[in-house]
Length: 302
Image 1: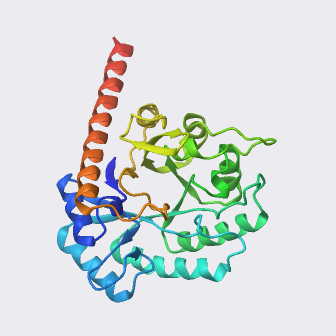
Image 2: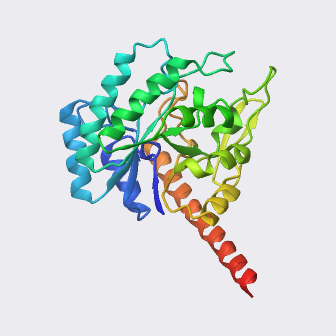
Image 3: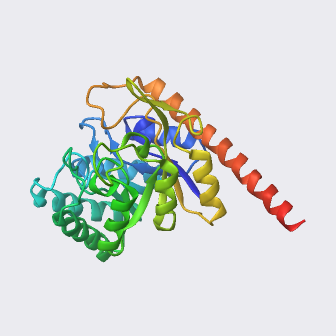
């Protein structure tokens, strides 16, 4: 098991992202967006070559690695109407950067569906399939996140995507089902259940995003792991019980939400403090879960 976080939730700059990672005693980052002095903040695969060289150098000097690239490829900012050349250009920029950093996993999505969409268009399977194959041909593993995308419309849509895109694996986000409609059947749709979605994705999951929240009349109320409706404790316990031993990323969303255009920048100090506290609480929760499993195993063999 490798612990890490989507580090732009702990700091904007590469120096800050390295610092919060080291403060937690972790050796990995899941890198999404980053800022280098003299350059604008941007996704790792989109920043200028000069900025990327600085990022790579600072990571190498620090001993902190990039376990996964949290890319914007095929994400909720794009639809199937978006020219596919935009997506392919992102893929071609990402591949050499991942190879230089020794990064194995890349988070992708499956485009934003229309508000009334309940059937994944064939173009989605074709495009995600092409993206997946390009990464696989480069020796890299794409993982799809259940989010505001076609593959995230329900566990059934997720299974269909995995069936029609060979080689694609899953990154399971514990909180995203709380805020996404279960688009199976006729409208009005209910909301998804994190546990039900997890049960269907368990065998396909190669990476986990830990996020927790409750849905309120005002919107989303993000909380520390295990304190919301994301079933974080149950999902991690089940994952470990079934032999999960891969990456787990924190994505707090408590001081900054990547896709919230109205949120504005959070103070760097508050971001760092929350990120480190979130990581420590996850470590504590994992320790408790592992102790429970050990006790249950001893009881079963007594």
